[in-house]
Length: 427
Image (cartoon, rainbow, N blue to C red; front, side, top):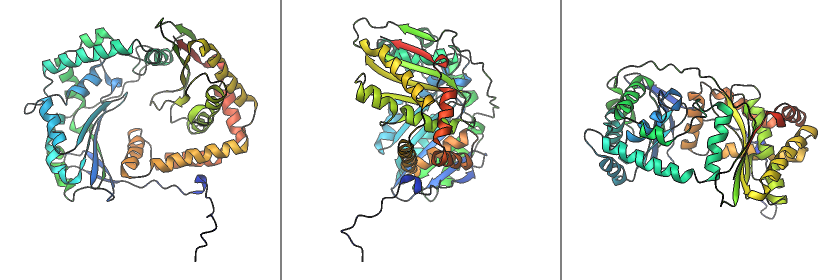
């Protein structure tokens, strides 16, 4: 009998064995690969179509994002309103997103309504007409949104820091502007769509409680024809041209009370052997609420409500970016404290207690990210689209559990040198 007067033993997150649930895979009749994670916990599913149609493949600025957005705004059979009403009638959510490398369309719905919603999704993917009035409305709305955002120091800082790191003409550094919105033409959107949204460039990721006839349904709407023809998409190699100057101060709002601070440097991509190790060091430095930067600059100094350090997950090249908003009068002091924390990591070994805390935090976060089919399929999607497998996942787990304080100090000495960082304050 269990003695309930005695608390059970506490098991650290690092002591758990983490297993990435394997996916099922099948191909539709026309060859489209479908990756599946099944779950019967709830009567819902998530269906995502992914295409190599991100900003990396643009021939004109904003073409990729505008095409992705406007595909949902009218087909030969339905207007934008009718498409939205068709999804909302069944309590579904049809979302689109455009990133640097890929563009996606994602359907969230109740399992029982899958057969009713797939025809709507098929129309959006196979039969967009890009109405002129919808493009005009899109341009007007985006220009208004941009005008408002350009008054915000954090928005301006984010635009500039990526431009400094990668170059203003590189997809990772290129930003929107009024002239680019005005230059958008329907024929250009149609041409980009026709080239990139083809059957042979499509991957499907589906998770949740799937209807028994899911394979016949997907074949009926997406696998029965070679829609939009066959197009070979070659990912171009584009040069990274970072700024020569490293220190920038931009005055954006003379009446503002806050400034945006960005301190960033280029870093190798996820295929580099140091990437997984740096994820641990970055977490200690500024990657969670108990980090060095938060403890010093938020808790002790009170300069900011929050400060965060991240490592970009871009495919070609990555970057380390420390970002915060602080009072205008303490922005320079904030920058100085960031460099001070870098020096501490370079000169002092991380105490075992702190390292143990971060190990448990990171493993606990991964455990949370694997809770449920929707999370698991996102993890697999990230691996598959980057030509990686489960070995990459398990190797990162091993690094978190075994990396030493001495290894982390060596990484800090290599990557946390002040002269390598771009420094930006926007006030």
